[in-house]
Image (cartoon, rainbow, N blue to C red; front, top):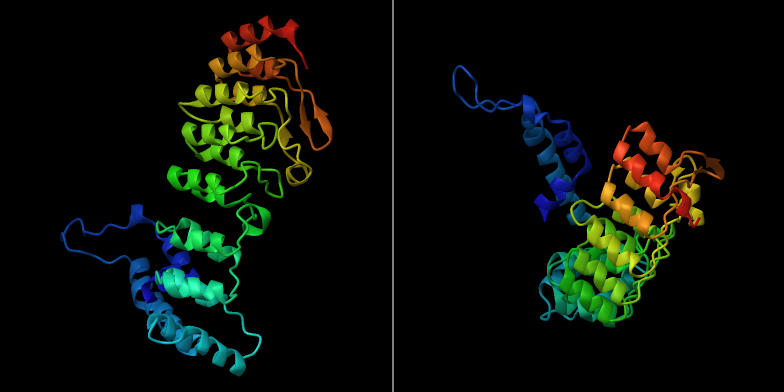
Length: 329
């Protein structure tokens, strides 16, 4: 635990980020002897011992020290009795740090007892539990009242589903436990939009089969940016009638946060990236080659065809012009 704290210490991280490994020759070219870079020496000699000492001091001064030891000795020590005594001595003190300690130390039994005693979790604890390989802590939280679709990180993350996009078995189990594929962050992102950015086609298909809404979260815009399987993912979305002529970031908060950015349609992005097959797919599904973009609430006149002309992409120009009379926008 001491080493874990030390390597998370802000000053230590800042110092290591300042290292320039490309300039750090570990062997003297002439003498062929090890040399210690000044930055490394500074971290090892100055910062690391101080960070470890700081952590030791924090632990020694922690008001929870006796309860941590009680958790370590569980079930030999009566945890709830110790908590009651502690509460009498220090009324008003929160007990959520005890849950964090249980997760860090892999102490499931006292963790469950604390939840049953009414100790409430916080968002950080839920995130830590979701990221652990041992899912017992996460399921313990859900079974003791944590809302499965509660937003995280102050509303920036739609729900737990988004934290386990790269873990298909757990992802599927959360869906089976009732997690909504349409949970939404404060800026309009959904599990589907995040899965399109970072998940596999199988995960995306799982969400669509569970009823994910393709009209929220700018799904085609993100699909255009995928590498290798962009067409596969876009076909999945288009088969569910994803809107091809939607302006990106139209959610009120997303629009306000990005008021200074150009916001176009999936076709604009595909033309910028030079993705001929993606452009062709979008056009065949009704994308408008003459559509404009937005900056804030103002129209910006550049069309996908203009972008192709600016880039001198003759094959793209011919493709876009061939669909010029078929716009449904």
